[in-house]
Length: 459
Ligand SMILES: *[C@@H]1O[C@H](CO)[C@@H](O)[C@H](O)[C@H]1NC(C)=O
Ligand SMILES: *[C@@H]1O[C@H](CO)[C@@H](O)[C@H](O)[C@H]1NC(C)=O
Ligand SMILES: *[C@@H]1O[C@H](CO)[C@@H](O)[C@H](O)[C@H]1NC(C)=O
Image (tube, rainbow, N blue to C red; front, side, top):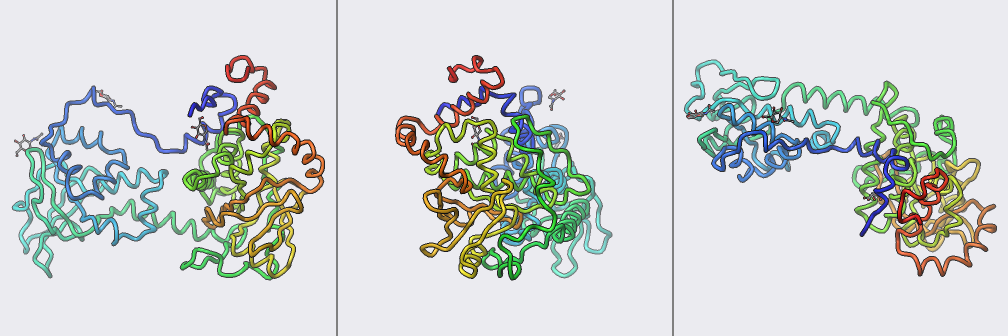
């Protein structure tokens, strides 16, 4: 599909750029400048070997160029953990930590710790009686070669060498080892992150109790969870009113930035896109407004959010009039964000117990009414209501995303909007391709900036 939206670029999409800057990007390849790598190289052998998990991590860590350069200068000894060591035996939390884009450096340090810039064949291990032999690695810490007393097997640090000289090439050798080697610096990074998280979990609201089996709330967080205001009013933290001005680029986490909100928002938008059927909502959050950035900031500051995401079918029923007022997309989305962490289960329990529940929304002072209907949760009233359609699309303890099958408006507005809306609905939906409506809105926004004519599809 032709996504001309990219052409709008700078003005509208600055927030997106700030957002994209947080994504990992490949370092520019420099293969033309460097020497050609020999197909008989130990590096090529590694990528081709049965150490697929390690090879994949090396690629994810964007280390190929570094290793190509290294193998041009030295022979390499690579200690390659078995696949199982990286798949099953690794603490999942640690693995997640390694794979988070912001921890790229830790991943690189860890992998380079497995590579010694010299050839060490199995015959070069120290004898059982002698002291361990210390060798600098491509990482910051050295490794120690020894012979394990118990098994008599060769070892590197704490890992036994289970396949000595597994791959031998003119420029290096690969030894298969039992487990992953974790340099102290990375272990410390991980511990610090983890303790930060457990400290921050009590600020400023109690984290909900999540059942580890179901990944859902164990019980409604308190006797009257629904509709009760958060400890600190989120409204104090919100940007002053919707604005089309680019949001300031998010700075590095300050001392108050306990949560990496940006990363969580990015996660949930990816999840939304992969889930399918919620592209319009994702598009509005990322491309049409700076709300993704704004949400990331709020979450970084410790707030929790539940997003009721209307599916594409619901979005397609919006009329141009409903969208084209300045700030309308923001206002619509703000009404779909509840400043609490709610899951399908907690909301369902609440409406079952209390009948009608009123949730605050980020669109002050409007609240959102929810009630039980047909064994599900129904939001809003009358014509302007929507069912919880795709429960728990994304839940991470800070952000919860619930798919709904309608776009909701505050009660006062539905009457005014729906009459005019109803007339146009049919024509619009049938006539316009999916992007049409958002495109129109984008154009009207550009018009407001006097940029109309720069953009061919706006004419
Ligand atoms: C690319 O290769 C050239 C020549 O080897 C080198 O001087 C330059 O620093 C390299 N650039 C990068 C980005 O690696
Ligand atoms: C790698 O080791 C081989 C055999 O020991 C040697 O001939 C070659 O010069 C070494 N290569 C480098 C770049 O040191
Ligand atoms: C934002 O726009 C770009 C360019 O048109 C598009 O590739 C991307 O998928 C959009 N993002 C979302 C979340 O829809």
